[in-house]
Length: 249
Image (tube, rainbow, N blue to C red; front, side):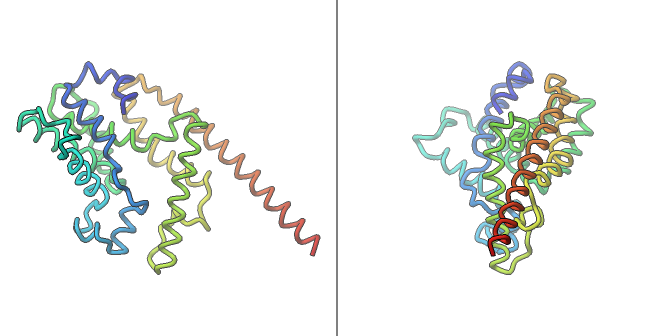
């Protein structure tokens, strides 16, 4: 988020309060994440799903935890603000963090598409921009160099596989893109980049040409090629191991 603010020169386009909202939202958007997504929370009827009536249970929880921390005297970075300023920041943070629910991705992207051609930084609707910026920060791992992105991707896939394993164990519907028996690293990234990340970056680049979406596309392509290459190497090792074992028997 900090890098995007500097790259897009938002520090000279938005007020300090708006910048604070974006930075704090990005910092807090996944607080106390349990490692299981909203679909699991709802299907398993967890405490979070019951508490928030199946409506973005994780994102609502992240917000609640964030403001619980900020309420502590030793953590209250907002204590010197006026009541109106606090309400403004709280409202903005809630909107930004709730916008990270991927179930709302198309809704938020489509709203931004409509607004983007006539976007005005002085208009109060720039809150929509703040939501988009926090969203793109949230899911932009693949925009980073391969050496940085891949370890985090491996952690994410393991989290996905853990969820699908638990879903199978509990007899819950298995989330297709998390099933270790059906999903590979290349396939998961190809779909995510093509249908989620690129459309988002493409729209944002219309407002901020400095993002250079072509450079991102090249990096994404390299990312996929690297994943495919490693996947093929793993398949080959598995084939050799299997045949070696068969020969010994």
